[in-house]
Length: 215
Image (cartoon, rainbow, N blue to C red; front, side, top):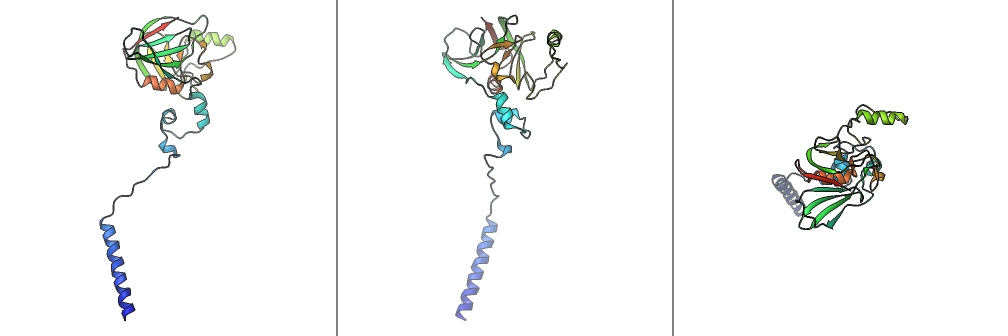
């Protein structure tokens, strides 16, 4: 009898404990794996557009900057926010103020296509459509390369993941699917940046900012 009473008491306590736990239960917290594709952050998530990534190696290959951006001393008397492209150095400086600027490697216009001047940022576009000018299409056709009339944004698009338009010109600061061209003079006049770098700059630039392109 004594053993039976102990067993009954243990059963009652177990039932009460379960009821107490149910009354005081909280919604479970799901901790996502850091390797989960749904939890990717930074440039990889941005460049994938929130869609499943077919090839992370391909994204990395066309998006990572072969020459790292760096924070540098910059004491020229220009307004904070100004962008200065130095053609001879093949670098872009985003002036932060307080004697500092962020320096990025860029590709500038090749011989015959390089230019200088000052323009304002007129608009910005994510995953821009590429519409090659007619003269570019004709020029490339003579070399046996047929360019599309238009190409939607994507990893294979020469404009990369972001474009910053300059005044009413055909020139832009944009990403590229050819990061090996950075630090060189290989463009048709536009300022190319690595996708991860152009995204970094894009997030900080607003319409109306002055862009100075100089020798």
